[in-house]
Length: 263
Image (cartoon, rainbow, N blue to C red; front, side, top):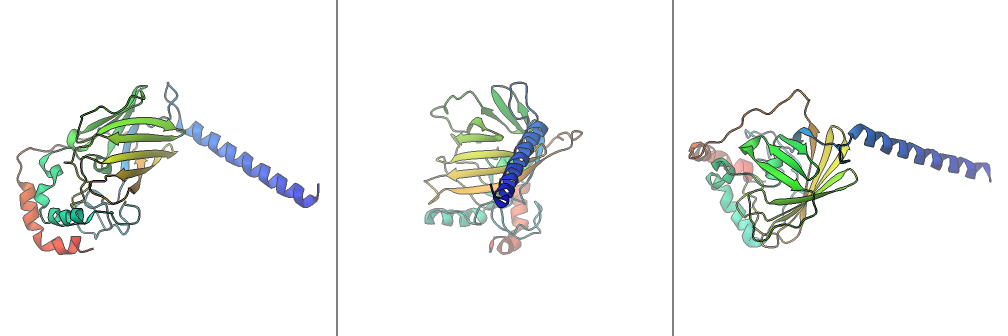
């Protein structure tokens, strides 16, 4: 073997060894639950860039956060059918119709834009949301989605692919929305989420959405989540039915509408 070939062989072997050690170290740092699942229990804080206001790029200055030049939708736009694009325009003119302002659950992925806690069991993973007191159970038993069921949070069935939790969300109703900017879906919405564990404090979230009633093609949303410090706990975050603040807020923002929705 020539010296050059020997050097290349040594370099490749070293690279493989480093990669293996890195993967082993990551797996060890992540920890495991008693039943062998990657341990993701704890409170998680999304870095969703003001997605509750709009999942698309938007200007700053609104009470939900600053400017987002990219949004969380891959490619920066949503593939609406023509009729649906017109409906988005109508909804932006009637923010008082936003269901979250009337104490309804936010749906997926909207509920994930705010802090939530994960509790793991062998049969399911529970998502406990600070906002609206919502909760979601991701069943791990391999059973199919129920028939004839529709819910604000849909029905979630999951499995692990290495250090990635894959969740299939079906049975969504047509009432929840993606944000406050009029972006909506129908009851045909189907979501496949991937919670990729980067390290013990970081999850990369990616979800693929299909809804043939509203969109012309599937699309993706992506953002990151960070684990909160152990001493942090949920505070009460409530919503009061019958409130009228949302109507007043809409009237007060009327002059700002063109600024926020023009892009």
